[in-house]
Amino acid sequence: MSPSPAPQKPDYGIDAPGVVRNLFLVTAAGIVLWATVAFGLWTGRLSLPLGRVRLDFPLATMGLWSAAGCGFMGVWMLWSSKTGKVRERERFLDRISWTGNEQVLDVGCGRGLLLIGAAKRLTGGKATGIDLWQAEDLSGNRPEATLANAEREGVADRVEVKTADMRELPFPDETFDVVVSRAAIHNLYSAPDREKAIAQIARVLKPGGQALIDDIRHQREYVASFAKHHCTDVHWLSSPVLPVAVGLITMGSLYPAAFRVRKEGIPGGTRQP
Image (cartoon, rainbow, N blue to C red; front, side, top):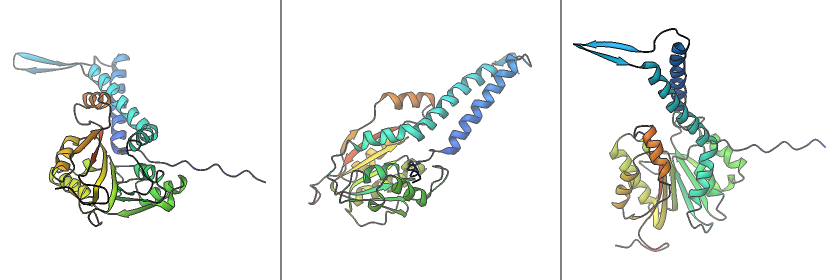
């Protein structure tokens, strides 16, 4: 008998592939700039007269530092996409006390990272993912890829995906025990749109239900929005070291952090006033 083919591993894609590409392009440009000076093709300095003052720019040094910073960020983003985010998923989802019967919603599920991680913790429950499937946010972002990953992880019977906008979730009030979202809400570029998304998440949460939000910016804004919708019990899940380090390297443009928030009320009952 011929050996059975090895089972395929899930592929959760590369986050922000365009950003990763641009980081490596800047890295290459910085190295080339430095190399032209190292081989004696020019001085690597640019001088510009400004009145009686002459401004001197050490372009080769600037290029080398830019290459180092962008190269580090590019490698970190690739590592995070292929290895780090799966480990982080397990750590974050372990912070929820699961019964196995939860109804779970993943907002901006992409290729199913959190969706499938939650489904693996269910026995009688169900995990539903919604997305608009934008490829610029995640490589190969399409519902077929999500369902293929669910099949490879052995949870296809517990997973469903829908095309929907997080600002208008197509579910009745108080439908879900757990709502999760990773690196999705920040893709709404206006604060009012992000507040709509948070309001929708709070609306579909059952009393006593929990939302786990992992994103790269705006987390304090999200917490304030949740508080307006009776979700005030907040627990931060991230170590403070990585967000600060990434924030410094990216000059404040990225600040990855995660938190868990609980909706007021008693599970199976009604929301407390």
